[in-house]
Each structure stands twice: as C-alpha cells, then as structure tokens.
Image (tube, rainbow, N blue to C red; front, side):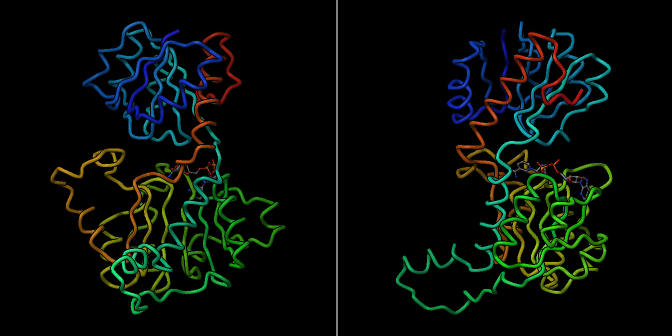
Length: 330
Ligand code: NAD
C-alpha cells in the first residue's frame, strides 16, 4: 500500500518510518504542500497524508479521486483545510488524529503566557550582554488572575488544569460545558461575560464558519484594557489587523500567537535569507509585547509519536478492512 506525504519535514520522516516498521507501507515523501501544482504527481497511491496548511479544496479532491486516492489522512486534529463536502461527493474518506498529547499544546500555551508576562526572552538576551538591570521586565502574578478559556475540549481542559495549578480563577465558554470542570471550580459564562471579566484570554476552540474572527474590534471593545490574549488554536480566530489596532491603543497588553491567518506562506519554512512580503506579520513581530511562535505548540516527542501511531493505525484499518471506527470524519 502506497501513501503520499505532503508538507513533509525531516522529523515527520523519522517518526513515521519508526512506526511503519509494524506496517510496511510504502511512503512517498513530498516536501511541498498539497495543492493543484503537485496533485498530478500522484500515481498508485491509495492515501495521502497531509498537515495543517495543505489545501484540500474541491479542485484538488476531484483530481485525487481521479487518481484513485481513497483516503485523506490528516496528521493533525484540525480539519478546516479540507472541503469535506467535496470529499463526500467524490467518495474519499477523511480521517484525522483527534487527540495527541493535548498537554503538548496546553503546556506551550502556558509557556507563551509566562514568557510574555515575565519577559524571559528579553532577560535571556540582556544577561548575555551583562545587562543585569530589571527595568522593563516587570510582570504580574498569574495567581488569582481571571483566565478566560474559550473551548474546553481536550486542550482547553489540559490548559485549565495547569491554570488551576497556578491558582488562577478560570472562566470558560464552550457550546458544551464540561461537568468535571464545573466540579473543579471552573465558572462557565456567556462569551460576552468572559470577554468582560478576563485578565487573560486563551483560545482552544476549533475554527468553524461560526467563529471566524471571533476576536475582532467588536469583541475587543468588550474586553478589559490591558488584556492578554493567547492563541494556540487557529489563526483565523483573530482578525489580525483589529488586534494590531488594539495593541496600538493599549487595549491588548500582551499577545501570544502560535498560529496566524496567513501562516501557510511562512510557517514551517526557513525564510531567514529572504525578504518577507507580509507586512502584517512584520509589524506584529516589531511589537515588544507580541510573541510569535510558528505553530510549534504540538511539537513534542510524545505528540509526534502519537500522531504517527494513530495515523498509521487509522490508515491500515480504513484501507484494509473498510473500518469506519478509526478517527474517521467521513
Ligand atoms: P476538541 O474537539 O477536544 O475541543 C474543542 C472544544 O471547542 C469542544 O469542547 C467544542 O465544544 C468547543 N467549541 C467548538 N466550537 C466552539 C465555539 N464556537 N466556541 C467555543 N467553543 C467551541 O479539540 P482540541 O483537541 O482541544 O483542539 C482544539 C483546537 O486546537 C483544534 O481545533 C486546533 O485548531 C487547535 N490545535 C492547535 C495545535 C497547535 O500546534 N497549535 C495543535 C493541535 C490542535
């Protein structure tokens, strides 16, 4: 059985080849993302394995079907980049990895919050230059702060456990409140109330047509002056230009983003010797109170092992037995 991998990085090869010892699939690794420019290269592959920034629109899916591809295996949790209606129409199954070490993303979220707040990234550079002054490094205690968590699924819940460990008060919003979290003292509130009372807001919901640009000038106006916002979920949850305006107006005091609206042109690539044309990210990165990481929240050994294990298990079950019991979306 042949599988074509797109957006492949060296670490994908390492973890997937390690797990493939149990399966013996034939892998064809492409470094490029999957799109109309490469889809015709597919020959005799029954499955494609894709990541967050591969674009599986109707045009691509139609050609995949013509090529005999039967399965799109996402090696990630989010699936907003796949046209599920088109996949259904052309009879291609889609599976994903709904859970892989939610703690990886949750811990990175707290790392971003602590870095921004306690300015360890600046302190590191200062001390190396023998500048031992503290001016400009002032932070605040997380203890007793109100942290608003939007989306309390696997990652949101893992982040809440960490936040409660810091002694923060957690306000939450989700379409389906979690009884265990309520019992642990989490206070579910309507979204507007969360915006109004939170000192820190962390996004952990999937990107859907309903919550596109959830953070925009209107919702920002409802927030406390000096709010901290962390987004490790999906870039399009934040209207970036509205966030920039709010940073200039000091409405947002600290902004941490591991995901960005236009990230597919930038993230996962070494662009250190090129001119970046995206003025918005350049402006964002120029703010001293903004921390950008390049979609690395998932990037732990445990998560990569689980992604490879679960993806290959699903591919084997779906293609060999037709089973629809393995993380199948369609
Ligand atoms: P999950 O499905 O376990 O939880 C998502 C939660 O969000 C659910 O409880 C759901 O009810 C809730 N939700 C859905 N729509 C909502 C809305 N409009 N408002 C509020 N809540 C809503 O998913 P998860 O595993 O916790 O992952 C959450 C998201 O994190 C993923 O969709 C993905 O976008 C992102 N993610 C990012 C990385 C990274 O490396 N940065 C890695 C994995 C996942």
